[in-house]
Length: 526
Image 1 (tube, rainbow, N blue to C red):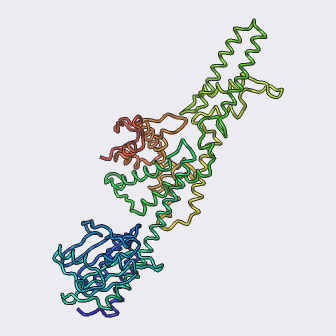
Image 2: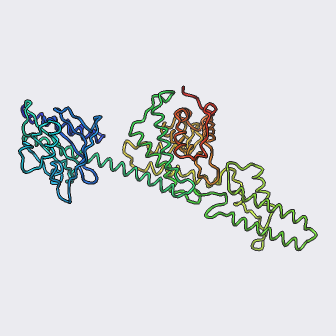
């Protein structure tokens, strides 16, 4: 077979250049480099290697037409050969041509592997003995990028001309060198992109960990939400029933969803710790319950003095002292917070504030001032309306921060996915009051993940850990009330996403039986 003319060679190199620039999968990219070089030189076989972090050559793809071999790469046959060290004791590994080429940054062209004296080809001959093959011409080319780094090695075997093995000509060598330059650039660009993706993902996880570390009570939330979001995304991808049967997320979209999950609470980096960590109602920078209790102690002393002054009123004073003990315990109890403070208890706080007075700076003051009374009258949890607004403001900060970042095209939906996890399908959520139709499906997935994680968490200071069945029941009512996406909730139940999550993150004491036939808002997809 005659040599390629310049026009044909250029055409093939241009076509290859385009493929190299568009291929995202490194394994396919390496195999494409090998197969293109093999086609350009009419080689019978070849191998391409990548460089590992410990400076060794890893077999990526091996092909041989005569032996009908295709190993590694896109084949179903893995390569189990050991990696080849480029250096041995700091010196070039002369026992392997590919290692020598990489170590010395040189192209090695051998006409006959059995006749050459200046290079060690014993490995090729040993392999020939096992396979019955005859290695003759060998071309070994390091893939060297513009910075002089070796990111792979290409080795071709037995150039063919009319079914006859011939040496690799200068033209073919030049073509492979041109190809290797293109390949090295493509591999470098791919590695740079991969490294940047890994770095960005690591930074996102670092921010999430920093936020989790801010609070001992919500630690792990920023880690669990992205995991649960992807569990639900996988379930939606796999479902072939119901209104979401045709919906799919590709690899880039799942990656975007993962990044958004890790960053969904990044705005909490600006939230004061005393609000995030508020485990009792009276806690601000410090827990004011001790200060309040000290005032009750003063009232107690006042009653004791009154008893000494007016012994004839001893029984009435004893009754007041007993009531004081009960009121004092009541204040300590409700300071802890809980799921709901009944209205009679709210009114009792106001009554206690008016009932007891202490002398401060020559003036009589109520045992509970207006601020303390308002905190103790919080009916759900431990946060006042003002503090809850501070907490809720984190989502505004999240959106502001994420929208300020110049995300590449495949990550441009991160702000939308991350910024919608407090929205409700009926438009009553925050911060933007979006409806279901105004939100993407991935954003709605994250809303479900954020809610279920919060419901099932066993580390909140103001509530006992809920049973799995109770969490699902609450989610069901939220689905009925159009707070979460009903279609996604049905998949969440049907595909047992809640079971997968519970087994991984909930305690054994929380996990109980769930009767799916009695879940509010759930419609079976069968």
